Image (cartoon, rainbow, N blue to C red):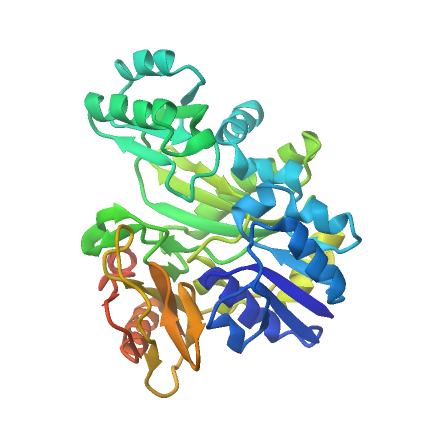
Length: 422
């Protein structure tokens, strides 16, 4: 089967590497891919935003199945466009992708179906929103309704910060049209957990839980990023919490989407907070997370393509999805200065063989070299029998990668180890 993966990041590289292991895959494409992905798939230099050109390329190259991973393209209906020419996809259609595309939709869905989440109010008028934040409990969380490259959430610790956040989003339009409506919600406390789940509209199979590290600097200091590293499984996500999530969050969400006439097929990402009152949903994503995918997929023992096809065909209940009883750690190697200004274009070198996985993200081919071309350049993932050894191994293997301006956090997994130590 000829398979294409849409996207160009570390998440897509992890998906490509896992799909490459499937005996069903005869030819593998990445659109647009990157300099590192080009080692594992045929890369087509087409903008991920050009749905029309992608559809044409898929048609002309006889591609039989497409994995659509980026949020914008799912929300904009890439799956619908490919389905229209008879090509099946892994990923939700436009109607179902709204679960990430609109925070107002997802919050209202949770309220309607009794799915635990933070209390909230919705505003489309900046004056009313400003009035509200003058008396809202602090800290308060202010979210742009639409997609904002993972940056549309502001936690305001003070009244002044809350007023500034409303003004920035609704009046200054720092997130463009995504900020025409906003959600203002209560600040929840507790450890966070990320759970990705395979869904076929009726059946849901959770993957291994993960713990992300969003802040740029050690000890969770610095600015928010797309993610500086992950570990799996997440020690906060115990068996009893998993059971509760399945009963109160996962299955109710899938049923709610079905009742709304928006059956969800693909990967549904649950961003959870384990509060003193039990687990609650912080956010939904309509696709694989990045860099969670980079620790979850190396632990998948069964065939990824089989699981994806089952999601598309509605046969997930009859398909084996099996994960290793092991642990994984991903350390992100970034360009120093990320997520603000940074220099790039530096050659990337690797000492010998890496005992693990190199997932390229912000990297491009330049002649015979691969050079840095983004904030998060790559992720180094290691798998081991337990979390302490997986973390140690990931850091050891990351020392084999070199480029000028390299920056990484030195404490990925430290929080998880503290929890394990009790």
